[in-house]
Image (cartoon, protein in one colour):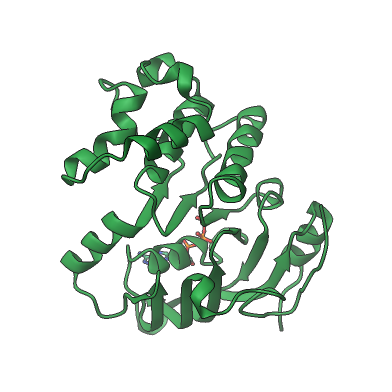
Amino acid sequence: MSTATTSSPSPTPSGAANDGALAARVTGLTKTYGRGDNVVHALRGVDLQVPRGRFTAIMGPSGSGKSTLMHCIAGLDAATAGEVEVAGRRLTGLDDTALTLFRREHIGFVFQAFNLLPMLTAGQNILLPLELSGRAVDRERYDSVVDLLGLGDRIGHRPSELSGGQQQRVAIARALVADPAIVFADEPTGNLDSDASAEILGHLRRSVHEGGMTVVMVTHELEAAAYADDVVVLHDGAITAHLVEPDVDQLTAALRRRVA
Ligand SMILES: Nc1ncnc2c1ncn2[C@@H]1O[C@H](COP(=O)(O)OP(=O)(O)OP(=O)(O)O)[C@@H](O)[C@H]1O
């Protein structure tokens, strides 16, 4: 469905939320690799607000800075300059230990590779991060996440007995079970065929609209981005469009367009 659309560089889609409803906020984010003749400006002063309870896609061509932006917001990489705040906590300046603890408590990750342990069942894989970090398992939460991802009849199977789409559903359940403030999905359908991709994108949407989660997905695929509520388009390390519920035609136009 396509409704309102904003297409000029803008930190927040129209109608977006006030501070209390933000899952993340970045201000003036700059990331520079190398120096001198080899300098690469991966991010050039990005401002972005990620509203809670929405599905946001970060889209752009290869090398536009999508992964760098996600890694900086998620505390996996330090920016050269600028501020990052997630779930009301300022991450800028935290040391590695504090960042690791923060990520464990508040952030979920889904990657292109499912990263499941082959000797464990789906259920054991879902619970492993909680158990490794010594946190209590909330059985109600576990049951509702398994139900949301439609994994009830697969929970005792090992990854080798599951399809790619089912394995990715297990990985999403593992990311959701600790009830994180924000889930980052990095090209989550990159290893899947088109049917399984559609299924996974549908599950990510349900995680937001029925499960109350906040999801930020990095993708270079228009069809994948079209599942999101908000789409941020990057070119050469800068946001060139911020679209609300765009269709594929609007995304195609935004991907072609560059700011001067
Ligand atoms: N460790 C690094 N050292 C030097 N340059 C880097 C490094 N990591 C990324 N870059 C450069 O920063 C820019 C942005 O890279 P980034 O991986 O964020 O882009 P992307 O949009 O995620 O690309 P892709 O879709 O191909 O994964 C690119 O020019 C890339 O070559």
